Image (cartoon, rainbow, N blue to C red; front, top):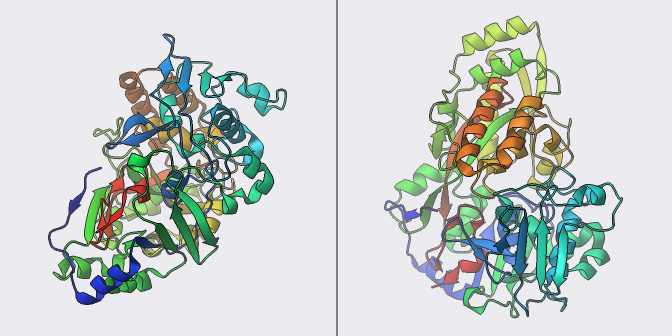
Length: 524
């Protein structure tokens, strides 16, 4: 991920220095919302993933950007000539806090847990990432006790057999969904395991007081000493107003603003020479968007969706976030294979929007616009509310804290229109289009928020999964154009993240997959 320090900003004054000295090897991060979950089988948003990645070990991981490297595995695995069998040796001596070994059985149990529909994982069932494993259908249907395509060749050797080749299978194994988990602790705590996670990563969960505070402590028994956590604790303050968090960061009481610089203060921070050295910017491989549920009135009418697309002034929305991004014409973000420069954006044309609404025959249209309750999305929601009113749609805004927001928007039929964003979990278009638009992803916990369903698009997306990268790009670009023509989304902008970080924090970066890399941070 590209990172640079914005030269206009900085700060070195005595109050901050004294606070930093008092904090020692503890780093404080602030978020305006609580966490949705820490269960790696479930959590997949930009706030959860960095912590899950700090707590749990996968076979592979990403370093140096999106380069796959071994983590619990001894190497990147052996792949059969037909591309359907993957074999991994696992390093010995990796244990969970409770002493349970991180062995082949722990990985098999974890992936089967994700596959089980009872887990409520976004990747559960036959259509999840691990539904291509041999024997997964029988397991999901309850006809088999385990997945026959996951074989334990010995206690520290695991083999995966796929029904068909999938070039992104190694990427799946690097995500938190494929984290080993301790069976005893998971079965002890059940659905509340998220609040009692037993970790094996660079950090362990020391405390989580919902809505108030979370504390990660350095794991003294972490196996990879060269890449162990470099600070003693990460204290994460929760449900802290963004303006208050910034004031505390300026005093030196907060080291990192988890959501970046608040929109209202962005210009002042940039222009103030006192803050030199505090601001880091990073291009995000993602897209923020307005979705419309194609299975729920009034947005089950394509004319209404097209009218909305013409009503949205994206340049104005980008101004509301201080220009921190680039207007989006499409779903696939800049920097991802498949981003298509030939895609033309829908014109901002309220008059055309009015005409389309008239053509739809719908009048006195009312709806509820769902948004996360952070400052930027709330401002965007207010602008969209005004823009929809111009074409005759009255939208009430419902701003929710993160956990409730995610539970609401990923419940099929619970929302008609809302704001969201999607960022890469691995560097391939298959991490966007199938997850966001395949008909089978319109399920509890799934991210097809628009309820989009198109059999031909489904077919193309399935085809793209089994071919090489170059061939897949052409198929994904074709599918994207078909999706855009149906207007389930209004892509708004591809964001640039601006972080406010105390200069005492060294090795700070926004990783293109993990976001915050807590385990890399050190204190000056």
